Image 1 (cartoon, one colour):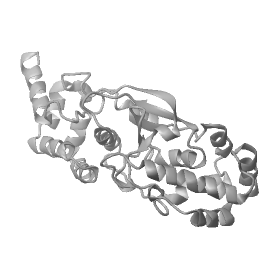
Image 2: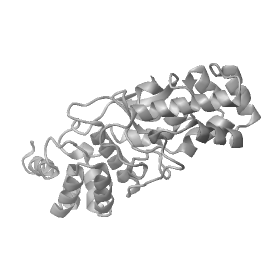
Image 3: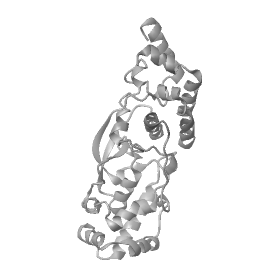
Image 4: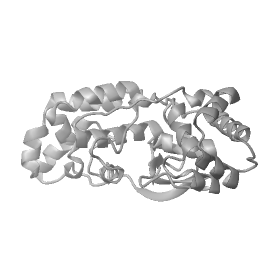
Length: 292
């Protein structure tokens, strides 16, 4: 699509206003609702598609790299993490990751988690919480979005939401299962789960690779202590509930493909260095006069 046809398609004041208003919404839950409504307009999606045709190749560009980060150095950007999703694998080793976690280099499957500035979890909270709950000192594979001047972790949540919405044409959501471990737990609760679900295979892995683990009670005690350590660290400022978090692998998406959108393809500038309307006014000048 050339610039002229692009402008004809997207120069809708209402669409620009809808997108601008969504990004200017401070709280993430309100932002996701606003974006979900705005993305229904094809012109809003066209605006989000225009990152490489807006007169600047770098304003929407984010750098990222893959690295391993120690679990205890990361902080969640959602305010609830499901108990069931966090400890089930630790009691059954369903995904074959328990030994790697206890050894200190968690292998949580083919998809890395997504982080920002080496500090904040953007996507992959339950993979991180599994590793943390067994061994907070273990490292986890992450694609880390490099810190960008003026951007907070909440801004990055918006950016990633927009990248997902651009591809799917909607804002997907999910929920946490079980009680919220970010509020802590008791040893009695964890012990009941251990008694009901611990498999012989998982028990043997805990005994061989865990630290000071000689009984099922020791397993429950360690999991409880780590959950309460996680709860003490708490969530990042302004963290929303699980249902308002971006999902980089929702539907038929792959995390790697979603992150490619942050190379300048998806049109976001939050916090806005210029409003969306100003950006597209600049495109109009480029079209008319040949310079911006």
